[in-house]
Image 1 (tube, rainbow, N blue to C red):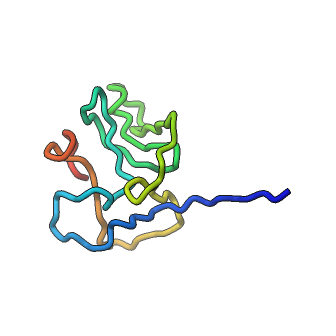
Image 2 (spheres, helix red, strand yellow):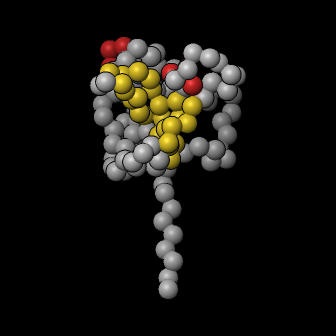
Amino acid sequence: STTWSVSLVCGQAPRNSRILEGTSVVTAGLWPWMASLQKNGSHVCGGTLVAVDSVLSNANCFSNQSNGTNVAILHLSARPTLTDYIQPICLDNGRTFSEGSVCWSAGWSSGRGGGESAT
């Protein structure tokens, strides 16, 4: 019998083909790993899809007690269907960035889904 191994590709954003300088509002699919954690249909916290079944978020979203880690990993009960709009980000791929490198940051703001600031 033949065993097939399927490797997951991460960090792919097929709809993010251009740089939007100075833009504070993005369209769907530009950052396909960004997640909105919602309760009763309302945005509570942001998160990042770090695997096909896991979202990384802030522990303060789930508990007022800070134990020093300040991180939460949510295991999804069902895996999302990966599309151009839903893709996991790469973590610890061995890449380093020098001081002064230009980087992007993404998050949720009060005008687009919740009360978090883009950091």
